[in-house]
Image 1 (tube, rainbow, N blue to C red):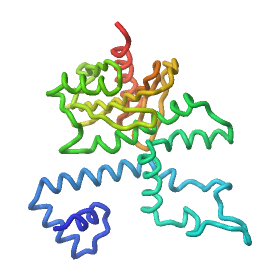
Image 2: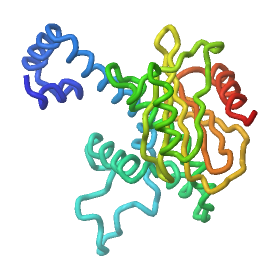
Image 3: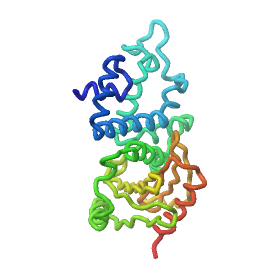
Image 4: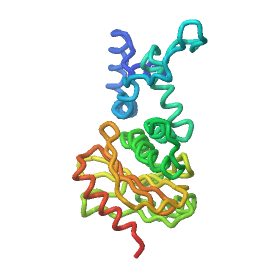
Length: 264
């Protein structure tokens, strides 16, 4: 079974006869089935985050040119197939340092120029939600370094971010550390710590560097699709706690995280 057919199965693009063949193959290969199911869950999470953007009305400034004036060579963006629009959007959001959140915030400001710290603050929850949606469904590789190597994990991420990190202990809230990974961010390297409860529900703590010494420590909440995010900035670091749980539950965990991250 080749990878192209497996990825077509993930996207639901196989004809019925090949769909049945791949189903039989996956029934005999549970490891592959788990990998592809994780991809399907990631796709669903990304659709939950971005479908509202794809289906939104196009701003007047982006409409095709009037008759007699030059217009887009390949037609308007909304005439693209949905998969092409999704790919283009993710290329901007992820490939360019996940700056989509800041750009969208600036556009919604009715043409006003937002300061760099304000843009970073606006981008933080969207970046954290994207990272959560991508990695939390992973079955085999949800983290780069597991909690069984916590000392190494903390030393590695602390060195890369230039700050002594302390992953919060959330056993009282029902969550145990799974591990963590290093990610690229729009303003510098990012550490992501992942936690899970007994039922497999995962939450992630996103620690972003390079926040230009913003001293705004107030909590904010954002809803990105089905992912809730509590976030704040303290000094040159931004923190965002993400999970697909209710706002009240996430608020309780976020308060516990915030308290543990304060200097002793």
